[in-house]
Image (tube, rainbow, N blue to C red; front, top):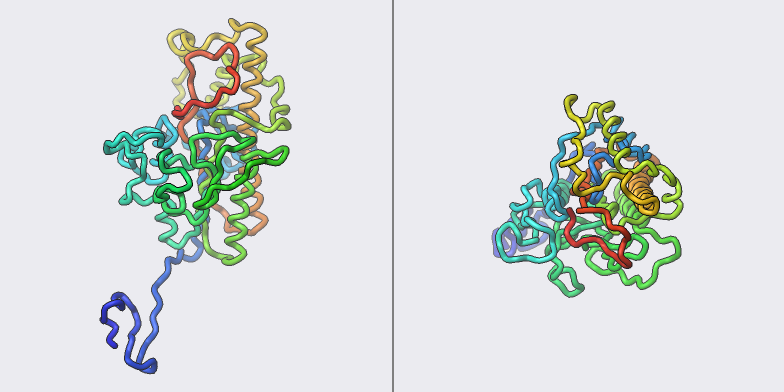
Length: 370
C-alpha cells in the first residue's frame, strides 16, 4: 500500500504491503529551544500608577521592588481604560478594537470591534508560546468571554483552554468576592464549592494553584519551559483584604489623600519618574471639583476614608506577597535564572465623581472597569 494513499497524506514514513518493507514515522512535536526561559506575566486589576514602591508608593512592596531593582521600570506603559480591552490587547498584541474588545465582555452588540471574542486569526500569547514548545498556565481573572457564553452548557471556544492555555483556575467574570467567590472555574468546568473554609482568601488560592501547576509540570518534565499568566482579581472592587494585612497600615492615612498625593509625587521626583518640569496641577480645575480637600471632611468621614485606604494598601501588600511566594518557589525548584517576570496594571485606578458619604449596604463593584 503506497504511503500516498488516501489517509496517509503527510505521513513521514512509508507504508508497504508487509511490515518488513514499511518505515515508521512520527510527527514532529513543538519543542522549545534549549535554555528557553520561563515567562511570567502578572496583571493587577485597577492598580493606580503610583501604588507600587518602584513608582513612589508608601505601601511596602519589597518583592516587586526587588524585581524592579534587578530589571526595568517602564514609565510610559500604555493600556486601555477598561478591563477586557486591556486584557485583549495584552493577550494578542493588537489594538483592543482589532482584538474584538472595544468594550468590556458583557454584551456583544453585533459590530466589528465589539464582538467580545478574540479573533481566530489573532493568536494569543499562550497559543504562540505553546506552539513554541511551552507549557501554558493561567490563574485568575479571564474576562475575555462574553457573559452569554459563560454558563455550563455554553460554547467554550473563547474559554482559556481553547485560547492556548493547558491549565486554568480562576474567575472568568469581571469581578468577584475574594472571601467567597461566586463562581470558580478549573480548566473547562465550574468548581462545585458551595462553602468556603474559615479564613479562605482567593488571592492565596490563586497563588497556591500557580505553584501547583508548576510542580505538576516538573514532576513529569524537568526542562520544559512554562508561561504563567497570573491575572489578579485584586485590586478591583469590591476591595477586600485579610484582617491581619489590614492591621499593618493602621493609622498610615490619617493625613488624607491630598498629603498622600504630594508625598508620592515627591518620591517620584526622587526616583526620576516623569520629566523634571512636571508638577502637580493646582485645584481647581484638577481634582477639586470632584474630590474634596481632606480638611473639608468631617472627622467621621476622614476616619472612614482612611480605613478605605488602609484596606486598599493591604490588598496591594497581598499582591506583593504573591510575588514573593512565587519567586521563592522558583528559587527552591532551581528554575533557570533569570526568569522574565512582568508586573503590570490592567487599566489603572478608578475615579469617582465624589466619595460617598457612607457606603451603601451590599454595594458591589461597577460592571465596567474604568
